[in-house]
Structures are given as C-alpha cells and as structure tokens.
Amino acid sequence: MAASRPARKSVAIDATSADTKTRILDTAESLFMEHGFEATSLRSLTTAAGVNLAAVNYHFGGKEELFQTALRRRLDPMNQERIDLLESLEREAGGKPLSCEKILFAMLIPALKLARDEKRGGKNFLKLLGRAYADPAPFIRQFLHQQYVEMIARYKEAFLKALPQLSRHELTWRLHFVMGALSYTLAGTDALKLFAQVTAVDKYDDEMLLQRLAPFLVAGLKAPPLADSRKLELVNAG
Amino acid sequence: MAASRPARKSVAIDATSADTKTRILDTAESLFMEHGFEATSLRSLTTAAGVNLAAVNYHFGGKEELFQTALRRRLDPMNQERIDLLESLEREAGGKPLSCEKILFAMLIPALKLARDEKRGGKNFLKLLGRAYADPAPFIRQFLHQQYVEMIARYKEAFLKALPQLSRHELTWRLHFVMGALSYTLAGTDALKLFAQVTAVDKYDDEMLLQRLAPFLVAGLKAPPLADSRKLELVNAG
DNA sequence: GTAGAATTCAAACGAGCGTTTGAATTTCGG
DNA sequence: CCGAAATTCAAACGCTCGTTTGAATTCTAC
Image (cartoon, rainbow over all chains, first blue to last red; front, side, top):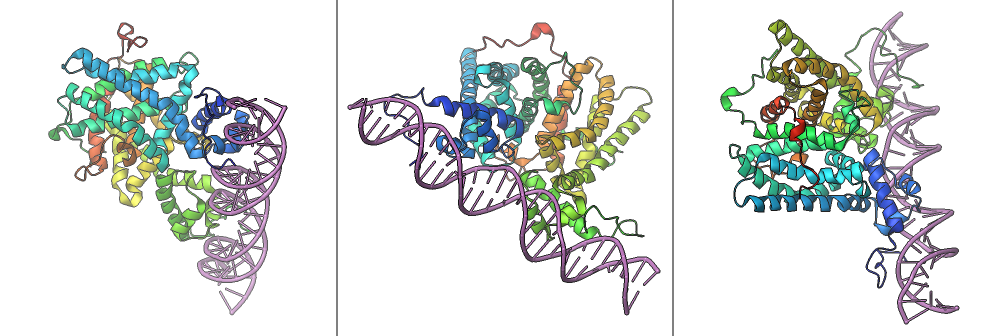
C-alpha cells in the first residue's frame, strides 16, 4: 500500500496536499529547536502537530529525513542568498578586493533576514541551526558539511583577498572561530543566561545581536597573526 | 539492599574501592565526549568499562549523576584555578587594571593545562565540555550555570576594568561571543572539518589552537563598540 | 574464623522509541 | 458517481533504554 513515497498527485504540480506535511515541518522546526534531535520523539511531535503518528514516515520516510527536510527548507535558500550576495558585491567591486566588513555582512545578512521573517520560521530556525552545529550525530554532521562546503569555500576565497596578511591556514582557523561565535550566539538565549541575568529591557533581539556580533568578528578577523616570538607563556603561568 | 548510596567504608577515608568507580568515570568521560549524553547508553558504557550494568546506579545513583560527577571531577579544579590565577594577577598588579590579554590568558591557561594533562582526561574532557555547552538538556544547562556563574562574574569585573570603553551590557555580549568561539573550538575537530580539509601536517593540537584563538578574541574584545550612526544597512542589502 | 557490610552480578521490569501494517477514509480525474 | 490512488488512522511489532531486584560473592573489622 503505502510502501514507498507516493508519486505526488497526477496533474497538479504542488501546492495542495501540503497541509499535513507543512504542519509536520513547522512543528518539527519548533520542537527540534527546543529539545534537539534525539530528545524530540515522533510521538510528541505528531501529537503537537495534530497529525497521526504514521504520517511522518508516510510523508518523509523517517525521522532523520524529516530533520534534514526541515533544515533544508530554510538552509538552502539562505546559503544560496549568501552566495548570490557575495557574487553581486564582487561584481560591483569589479576586481578590487572587498572589505572584510562587507564580506562578513554578506554572510550575516541572509541569516538576519531569515530571523526576521516569521513566515519562514523566524528565530526558531536559527536556533535549530545553532543546535545542529553542535550535534554529534554523524548524519547531522555529514548533512551540514554538504550544505555548507560550497558557501564556505567561496567566502574563504573572498576573505583571503580581503585579508592578505593572513595565510590560508590561519584564515581557516579564524573562520572556524567566527562560525563558533555565530552558531553559539544563534543557538540562543539559554546559553547567554550562563553569563548574565538578561534584563527585561534587553530583550533577545536578533538584529541588535548581530549589530553587536559584527564588530567583534571583524576585529578578530583583522587581528595580526601571532608572531612566534610573542607566543604565550604557558608553562609557568601561575 | 543496595537501596541508597552506601556509607563508604567504615574507617578508611577514601582511596580504595575506587577501581570500579574510576573505570566508570574514565569511560564515561570518553564516551560522553564522543556521542553526547543522550546517545551514550549505560549498557555500552558499562560494557566498555568492563563492569556490570548495575554498577552505575550503585555507585552514582543514575546516569545524570554520573554525567555531573564526570564533569565536576575536571571542572571544579579548572575553574578554581582560573579564579586563583586571576586573583594572583590582580594582587601582582596592585590596584592597577590588568591588560585584556592577561585576563584572557588567565582564562585560557587552566583549560590548556588540563588539555595537556593526559592523566586528568586530557583533550577528552575539553571536548566533553564543549559538547555540554550546547546540550539542550535542562539538567546540564542548570549544572553548567551553577559551575560557571562565580568564575564568569569575577572575570567580567576584571574585563570591565581593562576595557573601560565598553558598557557592562556590551561586555556581557562580548563574553558571550568569546565563550561561543571557545566552546565551539574545544568541541573539536569534527566541526572544523566543515570548513577545511585538515591536513596531516596541521594535526589537531590544543596548544597551537589556543595560540591562534587568543589574538582573535583579544582583538574582538578590544574592538570599539558600534556607534549608532554606523549601524549596518540591512533591509536593502541585495 | 566468622558475622556483617560492601560490592558484583544476571535477570527482569516497565516505559518509550521509530517503524510497519493493513484496513478505513478521503480525494478526485474520468 | 464510480473506482483507483492518496491519505489517515489505530494498533501492534521489535527494540533499546534506565532502573530495580535479590541472590551470590568479596571484603574487612573484630
């Protein structure tokens, strides 16, 4: 009967039949964000979505596929926009290297636009993404790698031109730090509470957040690489 | 019978009876690091440790308590050392504010020393810690908060004096970014592979890693706060 | 040497998990 | 309006999980 995925209607291309499917996707985005992949059960998910337990396997094939589909729905357009934005900036500049700020902003702006767009998941998705970055599950890591490898490669080339004092190797590490601060920040409010009682005035606001993050990251990227002679004294530091 | 925790020997204070217990702790550190809390089963853990399944509940009370004990074994001394180190630097300086670099190094050095000390968990523990930072489980978040709140508070005061151009509020965010980059970095090699094919020459080396991280973070901390007039153009960025 | 406590052990418990099944229901082109 | 395809549904399957149990074993103080 419902052995493999059905062949989606006969004539109509898309649109309809999406009701159950989208309800599942929206709920998945929200619950995976809140509890992570492992801790979110299909039973609680389908109950929250108001659909039958078997619907996930019918429409998506399984829990892992659902997770990937939920991520892809937001991630694909966002990373494509990042690439497009970078290319259009490079075209504008006409051969001249872009500034470090501009490149970084091109990276951050699509994420911020997504966070603002409540209809496309809003902040929930960025939290989900931040959590996924830190998830040890191999299928998640492999999926993210596949999603990110092209975008990161392009940005690395751009940064390399903008920061000629950095070796390719050094830049790799710095992008790693950048992604660390970014994903940790996106992953949410909870972590922040480790360090500060967030006041009511200082509501969690993604725009303000990236406004604060950007100068921090730009300065970090531009920092001169540590010369050998200036290496830290580590052994007898007490 | 073995209802609650036993009253640990009658005369001898400690030392012995530790064999099974330590084997469990060591294995827990290694497996929790590799797979995370949820994905590590007590069955695989006890099998790997060569002890009986029930030993975890007998010696620790349960899985969550084991996790906390494993973390605490390394975290308590490390954070205490961080505090001691900062205080000794402040005493040395005699009232004058410390440099941003020195404060940051005081934070990083105990972590690095731990990473070098294979007998006390080595790099495994830092990975475990990095993972725990991103774990959504409430009991983990609460535990980390409790472990970190004092140390962070002290360092925040120190940074505040070293960076008078930053408001308390701005500094809170920057420390958040710092911890993000740090935990993401500590969490390990896997994430790095998102951005770079790590060459054989560039072996994962915690010392080298922090040597690269420190200048990045110092520059980010010292960056001038973003003036209102310089705010990013976000809406029509395409 | 023996009593009593501490520890180990194999076995089972109960619950929750992702997934599968096959019948009931809905949808919709002809 | 009918018949085939798509979808929904309740129920169950098989498995793994953390924990508990109570007997067997080891340790240790007297």
